[in-house]
Length: 451
Ligand SMILES: [Zn+2]
Image (cartoon, rainbow, N blue to C red):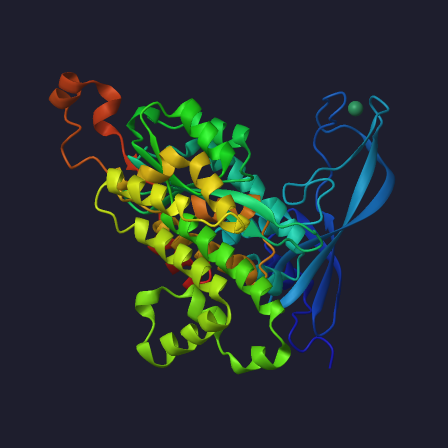
């Protein structure tokens, strides 16, 4: 039974193995694994210590090194290399023989390492892990070594609009979520980069390294102090626009907190007779149907009049964004702020935050940009995480930045002619412009199993 799929003739197997420096001395296999015992065919031709060619050598000791190689017929292959330690009779030094295919302390053949390096660029690690039965950690190590070579080649154009957002990732075994920063190009809807955290120093370093910090006109963001500080320190022409959804969300959150505390005052029975209040309150008024939505909602208001006050505060904060000019919006805000009852500290807090971000929030009315485009890609990247790929930040960033097609402008044909170069200087004319990784390419890569 044994050997039915395996060539038992060592000479033929040596050909199949295709590592000409070795001879095969033995072979063991079962239904999953093949173990091939190998030794070098030739003695070393030079002593690495004294440099004498064809030295007289004596075998000093032997060591077995087991390494994984590429699969054969779907079976996992282990090579057991009997590596000889020689004593040079010319100079007395001892040394291990070298191999072109197996590095001294490695647990993989060089060609398997190369295979993983190539495949990990276009396939998910899980997929490779399944094929080779090699740990995720090893695959990641090899992948990141490859990425190091590419790092300095990134040269992304600076857009006029930048969006910053954070990606919250729940890491296994860690209590707190980690936050990465996602930097997007708002002109072309591409990812410019991912940063390992959202600290001020990290953001400053990134902006300082932009190709052209002067061309940034607008940065959209959430209310996060370090972002604001970083932008003002590094981008001289940029105005900050706070994403409007983050502003109105504060009103919804305040209303929601009040709703819960009001509801607790009512008895259980009463509570049950009133329905769907969370949904009814948090939806915009103009999205509710007169029946039954508004009727149900008003039943709540009859029961708890303060709830109506809170609700109206929520609605009128949203309505500030319907203003057609900045001054109208500011006027509406002042009215809104003055209408907050003293005992509704939840909304007083909202006003405090708005005052703290006043300039940046009302800049919206000059530019009318939001962070919605960033949120879209953010949820896509979060989705990769939730599939349990187990990618570290470095891996996910590298997969996105180095192995998904970028949006590029190549110089048009003939633009690099001799006279053009003379006219306009060397580098300018021949430069390919890189605008980062388009959102749709990331989504495509996910669908194709690259990530
Ligand atoms: Zn020697």
